[in-house]
Length: 127
Image 1: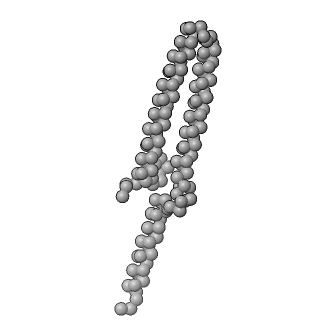
Image 2: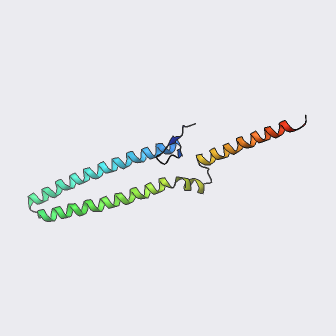
Image 3: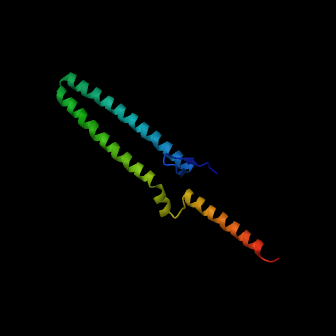
């Protein structure tokens, strides 16, 4: 069984869920790297077009800025969507009728309490 971890909100998190979060973070950072490379390549293209006179420098800067703002906002929206889905993990589990780790732990505590009560009552019964 996987060891539970604590997240910043001090709730128990399954190590598998934490692994998903780490994988998401890696993919997100790779995406940022790709956006950075795309920005560099776009800047080179704009610079070449300006040098050849096919594009005015001012228009090139404007075009590059619009391009980057568009992709920045699209990336930001997608990240928020994915983060929302990750934060709604308990809701997803509930829809699938799968108990959370916290629910299982609570049930285990109740079972321990009931077992102790049954044992206590069985000792009181005449032999």
